[in-house]
Length: 173
Ligand code: AMP
Figure (cartoon, rainbow, N blue to C red):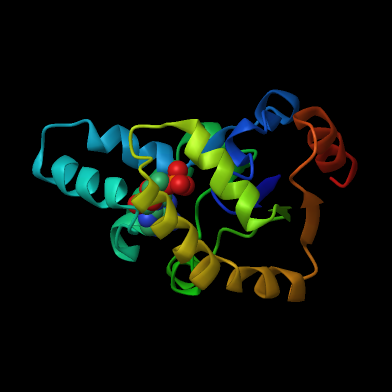
């Protein structure tokens, strides 16, 4: 089972602990980049700068890293993906992701902003948060129509309790 979670930052994608239930790994490209950003290499420094500013890492680099991750043996039975694709170009770069289901965690913009400001992660400054959300609305929301047309999109109200969101997701699988 290959699942994609789409939603603005702050919609609770990473708190959806579906992996225990479904026994497939949760993969977040943001986590992958935050890990690389800790390395003292040229690539690490560059990625740190990009993620902290809230901009997107270039599509080629992102696709290369994600492809490497989903080829690992723990992904044999699928995965829950959070953070990729972020735009239609990234869809084209890895055409064989073949999601079975795409969940859109919908929350109002103000709620997303409020949650992010309270989260206080290292790369969360007001400026980077605003940038990330703007990019999300500009680029990532376009993917919703794409997956809707494939008939695999399910919309979930992301404002509810974690448990009820989980239940809703499991019900529609
Ligand atoms: P996230 O945890 O998903 O909000 O991602 C944190 C940061 O990692 C983003 O602000 C981007 O700089 C980078 N990132 C994560 N996923 C992608 C992606 N698919 N394409 C480009 N950059 C990404």
